[in-house]
Image (cartoon, rainbow, N blue to C red; front, side, top):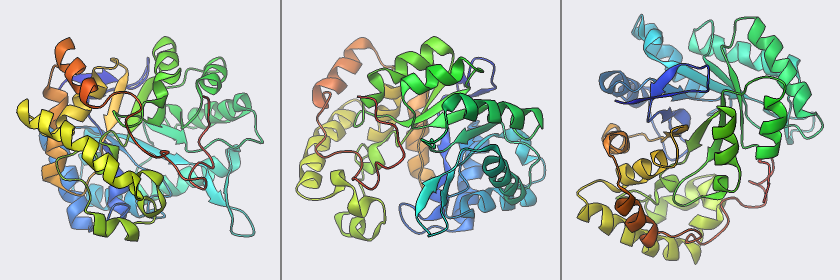
Length: 332
């Protein structure tokens, strides 16, 4: 598996990583045994970058990773670990964001304990707290880094302008954002700012929450999924239109002799050598299809064919509902 660097000064990681939200029933029920099978496959295939968060299943994702390390002594050395914090609840139980050092470090300590590790390689601020200047948040992250609990830091779902302000204080290893053939907003400044600043762009949902695969989630399960059940792209009439549009992409992938998920990830990797997709799945077989994307070298003609089938702006519906948009920075 080829490698890319996680930030200008960070470790090398496989071109394809893994997003461990799927360890916590986000896209359907799973088991610890199933999560451990994914981790086994990662080690077998040389995939070393795993991304999780304190809020994925309220710690369940991190606990699955921790139990794997207990059962497999020495396995920690095979992974570049990333986790996140900042999403929490206020005194009234309302969702909010905290970026102060006290909160971030306290949550980090809990994450380290759940995973049974002394340090994570990358620690993200999961969502920005608009009441704090990003320079102050960056300073707090620098202080946490001095403790040895984190080797580097990044931000999730921030604007290019915020990245530039943070990078003026200290190099930012990575910015995590949704990016795929289905969601191309990062091309309006974030892809470019990350490249200029030596920041990795870690692309989550690279296969469009299943729409860019050979087997999209069945219609009947979507209403029962907390996120997709209210997501505009997965509600009618948008869902039917999006499935029809991606049928052409699936046909193209078959014509090219590749799984659709592989082609979607390969397209992302072609957008810059600082772009690192982190697909998430409960299936080892499907994960292998995603990993295949890191083995494909697309020609200019291949990319043109893909973008002719799924041109910019093809997808119907906003990527988030009004409630889901609370937190990510809008910059266009």
